[in-house]
Image 1 (spheres, rainbow, N blue to C red):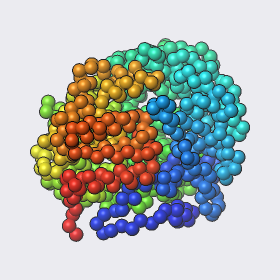
Image 2: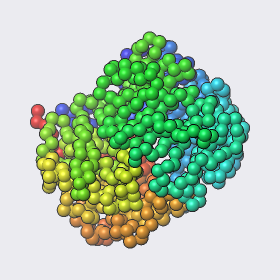
Image 3: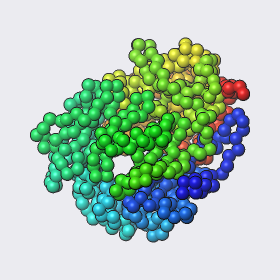
Length: 639
């Protein structure tokens, strides 16, 4: 079956001609060939999303037969397929996302579609009622495996910002109210038995509330209240119920890092520490379908999982031996957990998928996300540490074209988005493309990045253009001082917040960089706050960015056009719900008035992620041309 399936999947992909020197741009621009793999309750069927050009499609495969994967459903003109999962052995639920432009304000909406695994009996679940205008219609809380014809869904049916919980019939779309909305709860969690037990949400003042319901109790108890971004180290944030108990797993502080705790919802016992790490924050717990704790995820320079379940620990040890050099995780499993879907990923592999049969101890390979890319020919991420000007050690990554020493190379400095995010040891199509074209890439987890504890985050809180930017420019100077970068061939490139940092680099350090590229970036912080007022989380956004007018002006590249002395490339989609396209069009207009060298590339109907192949093909082509003009060609190892 392995050989047959690989042949079918690869036959769906147009072969790309590769020169001896570089890989075709299409191989990097493509959408993943396989993603969102799920397995049916019996384990006999698979569903996965594959792409062809700009379109995503759902395919299903009967593992017990030799028939080819069957196309089931795909993107529409207005909606893009996000994920699909098995509601029962025959029926799948699929999420679609689209962008709405209402009086110049772009925001996402989602729809939920049920369909049989052979493509029959397709039905949009929420329609023909007031609930049909709800913004988000795909919030599945519980797949209720003991009740295969229904799921639990959170739905803001009156569109007041506070959802109720409904039992949804996956065959006919009928709903039955299970839990009525309760302000200020905006999200719910169940106990893996179909009981809604946890709730959280923010109110109009920006305070975040946490609630719980005891076993067999219908009343909500408020556990905690905290102001957004406030430093309150004694708060535990419940995230999952220990099934059948009045205990919950929660994230809370331990020695300055997020740790996993177990808390008593009756408040009769002191919280118990489950897992902590001395260097980084604990991630989310890994739970079985019945609520058992299997392990905890965390991330150093690479991702790791601490398995608390002995059986799972031994199983994943065997998987790691079978697929060395990858971070391996279970992304789905069948009802009795005898058949597991494994995803193997690395810095040169966005995901290779396998099915592990625990009864036979055999692992069958399905396919990989970017089959045209040769992992051996890609540059590998190397962990680095550099000192900021105040002596703080900043972690990051350096990726060098294969076969080259890290000496006097053309360098792309690439700060990550967020800024409450982090760079990780994982595949990123833009970095892979730049390295393939002969440019070294430097990434850094500056202060303000997530995952490194309380002090790391708050050191740069509300300071986008201060300490955060300083750490980025210090990384550039470190690479030059170490002889890694050719000081005359350094560019700064970023996406989202990274695009903001790239524009700030052009305004503040035109002597350090030869050019700047902003992808869906921010140019005016005051305008960003102004746009946020149209959304329910406005006060939370305000707490993240800050409200000091003078600082916002000082840190906005749009207001410092005269200082820019290097060419700037701006790339933006006009359906960007996170960073409005006006952030780039206004920047381009100001650069034009000041007669500054620049180019604006607007992508029609493109989102913040530039989620179509055509968008990414344009992006990579424009970047390659722009860098060649301003940095010169990349460096390649001689044959």
